[in-house]
Length: 101
Image 1 (cartoon, helix red, strand yellow):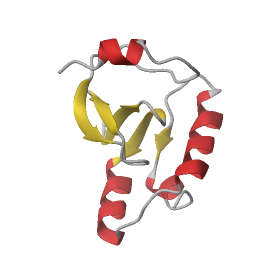
Image 2: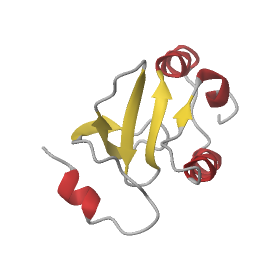
Image 3: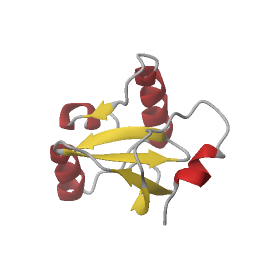
């Protein structure tokens, strides 16, 4: 199911990639149904209607699974918002992820 039409109807500061997206992933941060954007690197790129678009490194994903970590949702969303001011999609590396739990 293509998520594009739903994403275009969202109002507010969230910016989403122009890449086609597919629904079916849960947001790593808040658990909301999100879409995955195809990526060319060692990361997952998600577009969440609540958290916005972000990338999470493969190493960070492995650490979260291994240690059963959970993001501090409010703090992580604030960090993402500050990172987007630079005009890029934020990447949560393993080092950054450890500071957002």
